Amino acid sequence: LANPFTSSAEIVNAIKTLKGMINFDTWGTQTDWTLNQTQLDTTSNIGLPGTIILHAEDFDTADTVVANAFKTNTLLQSVTLPTTVTTLGTNSFEGCSSLTSINLSHVNSAGEACFKNCSSLTNLNLSVLSTIPNSMFMNCSNLTTVTATGLTSIGHNGFENCSELQSINTSNVTNLGNGCFKNCILLDDINLSSFTTYVYTPTSPISISHFEGCSSLSNI
Image (cartoon, rainbow, N blue to C red; front, side, top):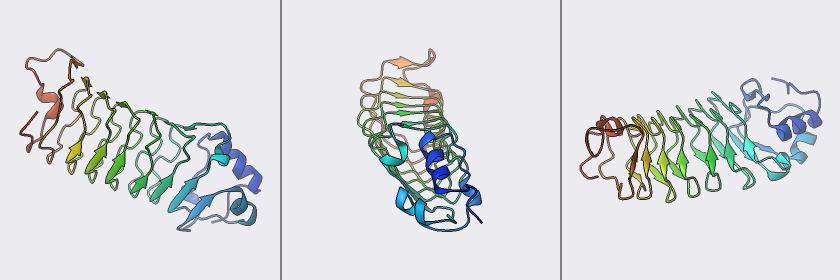
């Protein structure tokens, strides 16, 4: 399908403003697409990207992927964010069911459900993120390992239905939301040594709401 913009300049401006107006689902079937000025100047018909590499120059001074930017792009497989991007908006990648790779080691703020239903994600590095917002990884059914040494808070349903999740560092977590690990059936050990606060007052030291359906959990 033809590029919906009339010039490469329009594409660049749309990318720089990050208003979420680009509908990648209508752009054809190209499997590899790098967003940079050279390619945009020489390509009139841009296909749907299987791989997107977002360069710092495409963002100018922006540091955010806006809400709903790539929502339900089911063909998106890989995203490389520049280190200037530190914030992900609400639902920014929700429903990207083919997404297997995205670099998040520099992201320090994320909106709710930004990776909800991203069922192909497997391993993630969240080294500078301190808060998992509500439903951030809900239904990420192939997520196995999360590297996140700085986590202090996990919101409601943050990892609900992450049925393959086996490893996550929660030693600094002091706040858990309801259902945050619900149905994480392979999670067998979790460190809550810093845990001090509940979202609501539980009737037991660890509420069943947080770990409902965690059938392998043997050590907290």
